[in-house]
Length: 360
Image 1 (cartoon, rainbow, N blue to C red):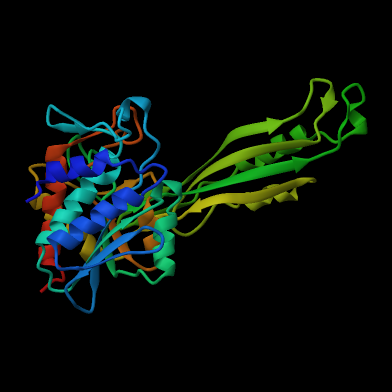
Image 2 (image 1 turned 45 degrees about the vertical axis):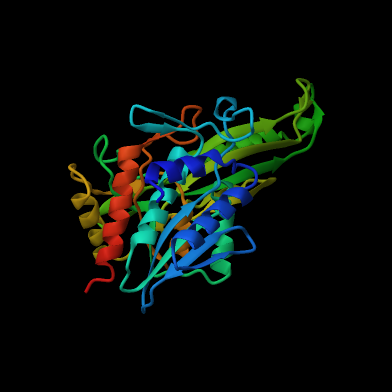
């Protein structure tokens, strides 16, 4: 029988930064070999398994794609390097998030649910959630979901909390068009840099949207992060662009379209990852009870700053929480790692949630 450590090792060793097929095939085969669930691997590469029946469905959700590895994380054979040291597993994808995919697989295998239990591992999360979006378009619609992204270390070091909300991200570009002229006669042209800086002033004066989720305040942010314009030191610039990073909260967005009141300025949205807010306090409390029983610390309901696939699920009507082993700063690094004890704790949480759901 697979142990959590060996299963995590196997998953992490499979490269999945530019092609998730091999990892998806492994997960599919494992679920078919170790469970009697109805297992499918859809046309997008998502792996979805179902067991049990009921009016409501609960899903354990993860993703098996990863960001590109550091050179030190790839072996001569092309597989990812996986090392165990001091109770931690090191390698690309250990924290984000194959450790918790493995934990969810084992929890799903061992569960005897009173309702429908779903396991889902998506592709393309690191590319903006394209796999999750595709699954939703194809009808994926669980009533509740526990998403295995990182929620450890928010309320206290080492404590695995329950995230009931996270911010989204809207990335956009402000473009100013002007008219070129020789810099010795600036009045003969229209300076696109000046127009963009006027737009930047508008952005700086915007109020950040805020809201409250289950008693926790969420406040968004807006920041200009890049600016690009001009062609030569002696030419009045005819084009200039600025990028804007906006961290969104459920509900209101910053009115960035106000910049278009400036002559020659347009604004376009390049990426819009939705925020998440759990709308079912009883579900959030039930998961917190499971997390409390599974550890010595005192977990809390917390808010994450980063977007996840939970945003897409929440937008489609699923009540989500996030419970995962990764701590802030562990993912996407050259020395990415995860605590094996915390991954085991997450498996325990998932099993307890499945055993207590739906409430009897």
